[in-house]
Image 1 (tube, rainbow over the protein chains, first blue to last red):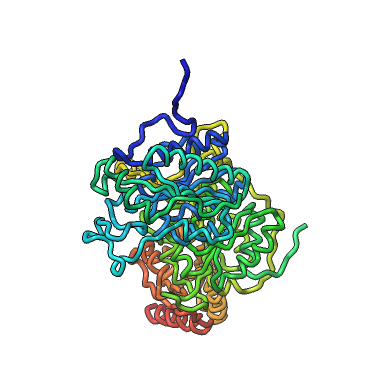
Image 2: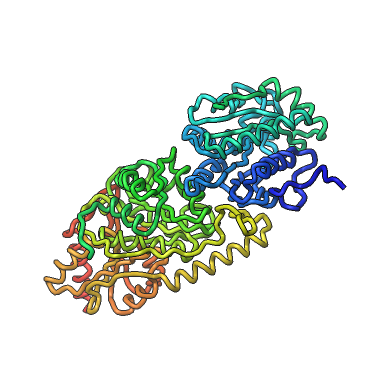
Amino acid sequence: MKVVFERPEALQNVPFTYCAGCTHGIIHRMVAEAIDSLGIREKTIGVSPVGCAVFAYDFFNCDVVAAAHGRAPAVATGIKRSHPDKYLFTYQGDGDLAAIGTAEIVHAAARGERITVIFVNNAIYGMTGGQMAPTTLLGQKTDTTPYGRDARANGLPIRVCELLQSLDGVAYIERVSTHDPKHVLQAQKAIKKAFQYQVEDKGFTLIELLSTCPSNWGMTPVESLKWLEENMLPYYKLGVYKDIG
Amino acid sequence: MSEKKLMKGNEAIGEAAITAGCRHFFGYPITPQSELPAYLSKRMPQVEGVFLQAESEVSAINMVYGAAASGVRVMTSSSSPGVSLKQEGISYLASSELPSVVCNIMRAGPGLGTIQPSQSDYFQAVKGGGHGDYHCLVLAPNSVQEIVDLVRLAFDLADHYKNPAMILIDGVLGQMMEPVDFGNYKPTFVEKPWAANGCKDRKPNAITSIHIDPKDMEQHNLRLQKKYALISEKEQRSEEWMMEDADIMVASYGMTSRIVKSAIRKAREEGIKVGLFRPITLWPFPEKKLDENINRVKEILVVELSAGQMIEDIKLVNNGRLPVSFHGRMGGMTPSVEDIYDEIKKIHDRLTVKA
């Protein structure tokens, strides 16, 4: 019998505990597949965020350090500078990376830290129960924008790839999406390329993945994917924002 | 053969760290500790070490968290306002049990305060500082030589107990130059099988401070408290000076203890029986030795560069037995030898009248 689909070695043999329809599971899998494809599992250290992925060490089959909220790029910097021969990835949500951890991500990118950032943007705080994120869209209702996000009252959403692309330490930044199989395949390629660049010591790499949060968006998984496509794609344009080649 | 070098306190911290095998430093500029990062920015590349100037104190302490989690000896330094920013990271270091050394070259607060010396971060250093039930080991040298000795000890204790250790000095000691002997010290490194440095030939290691089930979190806390009790039992350090026949005990630590010594010498010339009790470890507080001394003397004077912080720990041990008075200066001002002498004289006169 031919095996056509199996669990990546870089994932532990446990079920995910994420909500139904959440895209964290598929993103974890893509990260694990990238690690396996480069044969670097035993040399890879992950840094998990504060947020839904805080328990990433329960799922990834490699060393993982759990960082304080937003500090993952600093923690990864400390590890990478101590072990330059190892490969580091941070796994961060939008609140973690683009609100409380803004200084850490900007300066890790500016220094050209040889780390790979997996940035999961679902336009909301998941773990704390659906508050406004820095990436929440205008008009989007959340626990803390019950009348919809208003530009004057709540500020405007941050586009992280566009924000970081001007920094010379960046080797590769791409925004991808997870809303259908075609885009998942593109995301898979992008994640692998980011790790490949780290192996080649090219500089800072970040992949932003547009993602869903059915529980806090108050939608079914299918409705969520459609909402992402219709609302997030127009504001968060997919594509390569920087690639030094 | 070792020989003496003339060094600033801040630079001595840096060199002592290097002799202790520390090759990783993450810091941020702030007066009056800036000589330390400057020194290490020069020295680390010479010993194939890492010096990194972070974008903030918050980032620096989290870089320390990462480096410590990956198993290397690591240090950061700052001064009071910067150490306030590091408290989040220190709480995480304590909970995740990551060996690390944090130096606070204290300046006067609260707020931005001023750059002159102070000891007003005692509460922050010994009572926790960040959130949760935890302790840092806190070492308070009073000379440049003792800085060297205690920085090395801090690395050893941090590794041994898997706990952050803090060097707490004031701006004067950081800035002053004194002769120092580095001796022929060789660091001893411990195995760190728990470190997150790649899972080759072993199961993956996870380093975290989250234990979401309250039953687990209570067990985690109980284990930490057991460790703190052990540290408290084994690691209390203090100096007694002219205490053998003393009626009056002056309790003071760090740079202030040296002004106190001059005041004690002056009082001794006049036949006043007074001595110094100097905590070297501020946490664990040297309760055992303090208690013995309280049993022998008649009154206690506490001298600090603060509104009175260590005095609370003195009073806890004293437990109402003896009168305890206080002399302190704040805001970057330091007491003179005469000021302290006057306080000693007042107590002496009171005791004489009583007798």
